[in-house]
Length: 59
Image 1: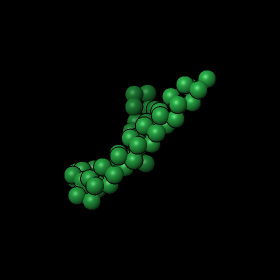
Image 2 (image 1 turned 120 degrees about the vertical axis):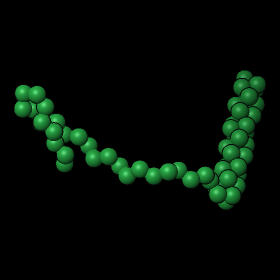
Image 3 (image 1 turned 180 degrees about the vertical axis):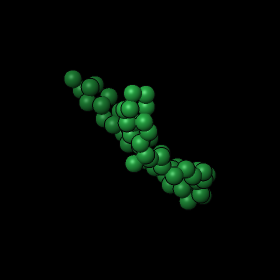
């Protein structure tokens, strides 16, 4: 662990920095998966809203 000595003799402990890397753009397969998951999420939320409005109209 890297320690530094500050004024007055106090030790300061710094966390080790993670290794840096450059992000890569998503591949065609990842983009396809994002689209499929997005459509599924929109359908799920839309279905839940439909059920909520249908149930609230009954009462």
